[in-house]
Image (cartoon, rainbow, N blue to C red; front, side, top):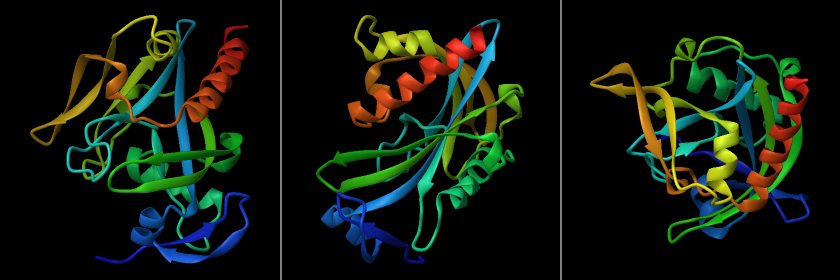
Length: 210
């Protein structure tokens, strides 16, 4: 397996060197990531698209996560991360079509890693049908869309579950599914991260609804 190397930073985002991925997550060095959230507007309702992570992922298997995301390796710039959208979702996106919300610091700690990321975060208005997305079966188990108003209620605890629709690989074929999910079915990004995402989606919803 080819080793990955990341640029590493201190908490003030000053570059302090280059280190192997495994060491970065062992020691909790800050590093850069690319995040792209896809959304749709249909019949006046805003939907957010989530990928479902594969069951063999070393972190957060089978959970719903950012539509397309990945680490930036040493020497890469945020725009290089656009490859994640094509590789994971099979769609072409240009940088000038995306809406940047800047860099969100996010930390996640488990028994096996310390993940401190500077997340270069973007939104993309996906105007084609959901079924035109062909998720990479190596990386993704499927793709789902979630009504934003229900997602907010789920995350603030006012409801316990929601029904979502999407496509998932079954016996190597994509099949349409409706399923019920709870808060625990989503990757546990820190609260400050989700707050920025939700605040931005509220703005997007107001613009598209006006």
